[in-house]
Image (cartoon, rainbow, N blue to C red; front, side, top):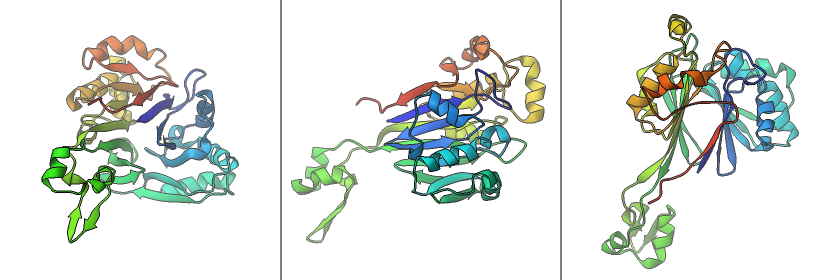
Length: 304
């Protein structure tokens, strides 16, 4: 299972009831943070999260202040939690330079920071059992979205195991992904498993105009979290000018990508009540919801 929590849903400036952009993903006792706006660690505490030490990876969509200004304080808190394992940071080019500039006020940490700078339109890396795809979007600075996929192998097939004459003593291990060799024969997991089953997929993007890559990576997502900067039709020209997304544009992507559910995020400070626009949004994509600080979900595999 994958736990997902929106820590902040605001863009540009924090409000008394809305923190700046951040998302936390938990899997198998580990945590990934996507963006770290001002006050992120406060939001984490408000959601009952005290395991700062478990943050293994911090991904940044881009380097505007509302997405990264909470980093120095968070790093100090992680250090105070006595983390000693390396921390991976992923983001656009100049990531190391930007982070080191912010670290002027957080110079001494008990852990190493490792940097993975993105330079291509599409890149991927592994985090635990999940594949993380980074894809470039269309903002006024270099900006990326992220899609996390957890595959699920097929069910064990007794018939396949017998057809392939695999000794029973290896069946359990093969189900767990192990490979064995005996008397010149190599036994691999695919020899005892059926077709791959549907896995889990989460896609997150913000600060962008609609692009084909968003639809490509959102396709089939169980949860699609997307910017809905404005709901008012009269703000469309402003959205285009500053390269942000309208709520109805996000809904159109969700519909084309055939996602399971969509949450909106990264609202303009002028957008006080995003729920007022949901009838319009659901007319395009019915299973859409206004994201709010603390909104969370546990993504689980479908029952067989």
